[in-house]
Length: 462
Image (cartoon, rainbow, N blue to C red; front, side, top):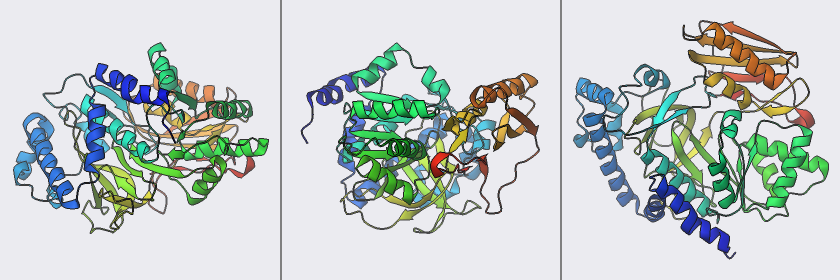
């Protein structure tokens, strides 16, 4: 299919100018990634090890936390000979980051951007990103969409965003989205009237790519099916999903509904874009920037091909290093060679966190993250579990420090009522701990209300 002049203008001129003005090297990075993905496994490994040694050496020189840790364990980055040597470094988790936030900031870092995780793991996290990390993550996603014949500037519909993030868009950001032909649909208000409007937006946009939460896209597509509105005649090239577990039935349904392949993306706001699916089905790791280890519950690395927790080291996080960071997700390294010919290592059997829907008192269906976002930014919240018992009662269990004040509690109740309905009873219970399920997994959002047309709310898990 011939590239349109608007796409060429956006990908070759407007977006590069946008990134240059922000001080990002996204374009150069994407071009480099498109070369390195074809390198031999040996050449790729040499380059990754060289970057890893330089990254760890920078952490030792400029990051107080790692300067102290490396001295304590007697670790010299220049002696690292293989990825297995990373096992000498302690694993990093959310609790450690919260306890040493100041020490984890590089002494050479300039202005960093503050981020919060979505909280679907039940442990909200505040961390910081520099321009290098942002550039590299954007470049990794850009490379992956180009695998599917979708470029910057092609029309796309994005089903995403928190109420806070959607409300923060200013005129410049809205102008940028229009110029790049990106249409944003909020994933939180799924009332029938809104769903009707979303379907018309998708049809009028005729996107080349649809991107978003699989559960939200499935809900929109089911509504279109009930209304007799087609989505498979728009010329969509790929439905790219992320942020949730993609189930086989969702993949089949979305593929039929939109008339195109469904591609999976795996990552997280804190851990970065870890892996993306290619048209041949390989879940390729963004290996130039991300080192993946698989560990058992005690943090001991597992042999290649064995399942365990996914731990990542992100080589573009020198300003606020993520070294052997626990994702809370389960997966395994895929030892096969992908038919696409790329030599990027692959993941398989990813069992990530899942998110679902909750139902307001008036019947409005919304993404469960609408409630998570109301909790995650409050000070003092260490863990939480939200249970929607019925339309009239929702319970919030909290493990919180003294920083969680009575004013925080009032705000939390008010925010939940604004989403679920003013008549809904919102019970806040402070507890000492939140126990996992018998399976060992945590359930952080549980709705006992079945969503319309058989879409049953599933729990948010980690």
